[in-house]
Image 1 (spheres, one colour):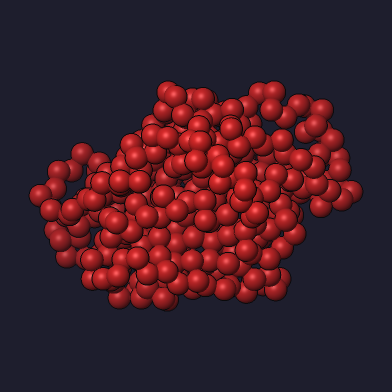
Image 2 (cartoon, one colour):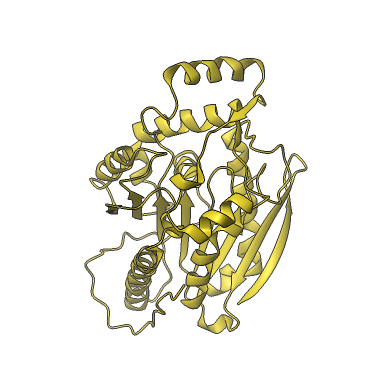
Length: 328
């Protein structure tokens, strides 16, 4: 694996920490995936996911969101979600040049978890994408918090405080045991100096509102030209975000586009870091490779690269792309 650290300067002079990981032999690359993390964490938490993609010849691109990890900005504070949209565009432009996307035309994918899942849904809803993505994986998206995790009174107070001072912060009361049941990873979560649990009213209100907006605009998201293939994944034992909201969104979008919904019966919030993560990671790779096979078949039959054509997931391909099983 080859890793390249990127330092990106935003329009408001914040330095973002990003990383591009690729197989040693670029001639073996079959696709590119952009990974967006959840609240209070950073891109280093996704090492198992990145390693799986690299083993399967997929370039992995990550970025510490502003206010997170090694990126600049006030810890845990996102005053306006539109600033994150601009950060995403900055990342896309920088990486597309580095991988020479204009020449190689790799199939592109996005992966977003929790806050990152909400973020990429919001981004696709509100932006005219300059790039077409073959598929988007949405993991445990922050659409609606589990009932009781945040009271109506706290929500009201957060909204009121946000008008006066959006940087007011309070403990989010996130418990690492709600994220994973892997004892080794739990120890790492607790000891990780880059993981934090305080959230500002600006961040809470921005994503609370975004979750409501996304839920109300399922048809618009589904019919965007940015992406026509979606995989939603969540555990039914997730004590943080409500899996029913994810199921509702996926079922609404399924009326207009290609949607796969996987609800795990036993796992918690961080499916990519659960004890049975190998099965989840294999699901991701299988889904991506099916789309790549379909992409190759349509491209060869039409003699052109992907132009946003909707892929029929039932197409069978004789391509012999090799998938490496994850052994973590």
